[in-house]
Amino acid sequence: YDLRAIDYFEQSLVICEDNADLHGQAVCLQHLGNVFKMQKDTRLAVDFFERCLAVRNKIGDLRGAADCHDSLGLVYYGLARFTEATAQYEDSLAIRTKLEDRWAQSDCYKSLGTAYIRMQDTDKAVQAFRLSLEIQQELGNDAGIVDALISLGL
Image 1 (cartoon, rainbow, N blue to C red):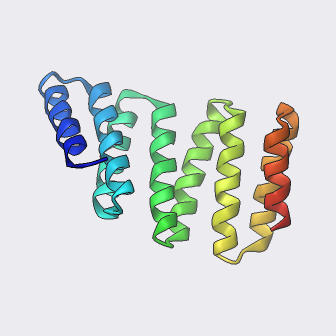
Image 2 (image 1 turned 90 degrees about the vertical axis):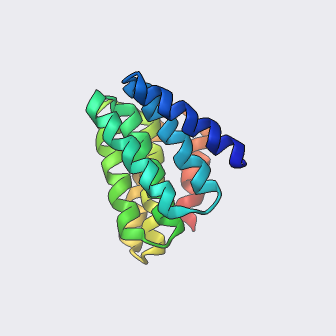
């Protein structure tokens, strides 16, 4: 991404705001958050993801809200703010559980396990990785099973 991408997304955001298009606003805010995350401007990334989350919540877009929590978790993880990252991953997990999205639940457990390792909480990490493994086994996803087993071995 370059500055043109930011300009295009900002122009799109203005149009969506002028038209009261909340879904379009959320999409633009998510893209802007992603651009700033890639550019390592974490302050702006968090701002755009939080704004996106507010819009997603307002329109009842649970899947989109969970995606925002995941994005915020990634930013906080990158900043070594693991407590905040796990809080975001837990919020995402709660939504993914409500939606009965087993694939995404497994991903949340893997993200939690990775953050717990960085927090030196091995017990919680192992528990999270085991839950991810159980889901992957339930789904019959060999690649996911291998990934979960490798995580448990770390």
